[in-house]
Length: 431
Image (cartoon, rainbow, N blue to C red; front, side):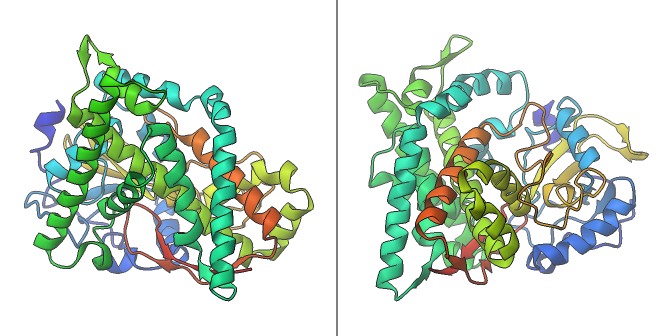
């Protein structure tokens, strides 16, 4: 079923597009507040809406006529949970990319049951709350190390440095690679190549021109896959207590995972684990800077209030803005006729501002409870496997940072245009 859908047309040429622009590069170069004005209009429609394809594609698909936008909280949750009707296998990105790139980097996030179920079960044991508690001391130690680095850079820079490079991206890099078993030295290069893997909209990372961009993306994925294969070969001979060992020695239906499957999961975890925490941390410090009243409330009881604060900062950041699904069959959804092969794009940044489910959604409220945000997904089989790891990391880092640098502030962030990750590329900070 999944393979056949990849060749289906997405929609029909005569289906009218909604007049709200959420497909242009200009829209995705705007701020989150500016985009939210458009999402608010679409949520008022009370249904899913049909839009033209993203305007700046690396891969042109002649029969791609557009996508359905899923912008309300309830609709997003329903699409997420109906994995038999709305498939992940044909791709999870809003943009069209060469299938080789998609296959090399999606792993379980781009699979459907039953294979998804089996592979997810293999790695789920590494991300349970019990396992997170087991490595909590290591996460805290890494948070100390990262804040040490940040404070040193602040001293060297006369009180100012880049928060993203010297703090936000370092903690998840070390934690993810500790879990995977990647040695120091290799992890820095792997993290950089993973950043390249999601930076196809950033000329500074990948260059300009379709051929150059695609070549750089293939180069990045080739490196990460090669590193994963090398580590897997080592672990088969000399097993250790890490996730690469578990993957290298695991069996699904009596068969060992291939190096390509291990590599794809390595890419997924390196990208998802690094980017989501990096963006939440960066947007989080900026939010604390621009909302001093909320920061003051948090500082009154840092340890006791950090749990609810982390949930709200993750909602506020919404580090992953979109995920795509593909209709498995002709069906009706919210009064619209959806055709087999149609793309449906779920807009998490819109759903996390939906007043029908989030009270006062445009206010930062670190005491918000309950906080039913869906930054980790709307449930279903693809709910974020690393959500507990992300929470542990954010709690550890903000506790360490605000304890040792209670007056640290963030400057205006430099955002990277794009429709997948909510990327803060650079952001100065001062203490």
